[in-house]
Image (cartoon, rainbow, N blue to C red; front, side, top):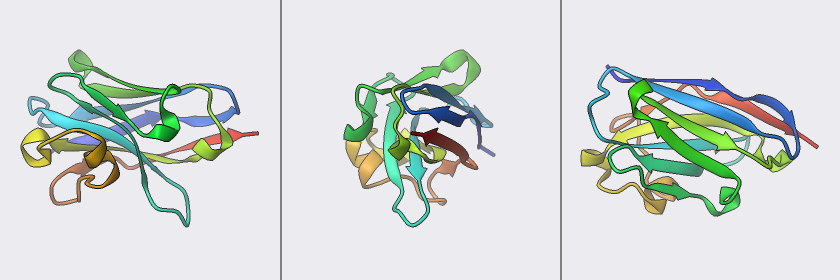
Length: 134
């Protein structure tokens, strides 16, 4: 059973930084497309960034490029999202997701924006709150 456990987040003032982490447990040998998504009440879920755990290639949504960095630590089975220059509009619940590359086929902007994993073909964390005050 694969589980994703998120940690980090919290509250920060605009311009500040936060880092959120996602630890994968269970099947850690599989090559995944792993990503971060966010959602605020009344709005659609947004893709933020993803990473191919096999080759480390990353993709970012336009609204976080240059500010957020996704990275992995394979020894710790962990994916991080470093968020700098935070804005109030970054306030959301952030979710970690993973889908095997066999299922995802590609780990790119399409996966991030149009084809995130469903509950049947991927895994999701429980979500954590990030609040940015002005």
